Length: 108
Image (cartoon, rainbow, N blue to C red; front, top):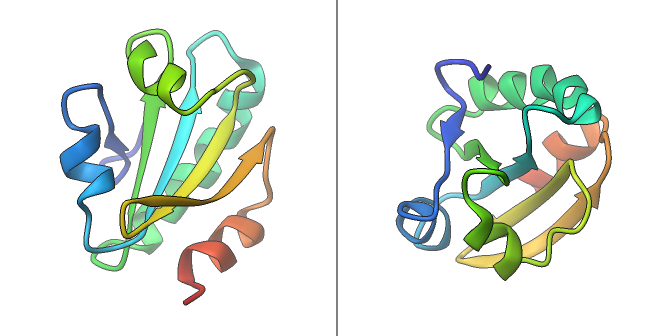
C-alpha cells in the first residue's frame, strides 16, 4: 500500500525511528478498512518521496500496532502527527491537504 520511501512504524521501532530521530517525522495513523485513510495515502507517499534525507514520513497501522495508538490517544483515523526532537508538535485529524503537511514538515 505504501511507496518505497514511506516507512512503516511499529510498536517495536517507534522509539528508535520516531522519538529518537534527528530529523522531523510525519506519522500517519491509519487502517486498511478506512476509506479516508486510503484517500490520504498518495499524499503521504508523495511527501515521503519528496523529503528523503530531510525528514521521515511513515505510517502506523492502528490494527496491528495498538500500543502506539493508545499511547497517543488516537480516537479517529486518519490522524497525522508531526514529531520534532522526540516531541509531538502538531496533530491533524481527517484528510489533510498536502501543502499543509509539507509546510509543517519544513517549518523550523
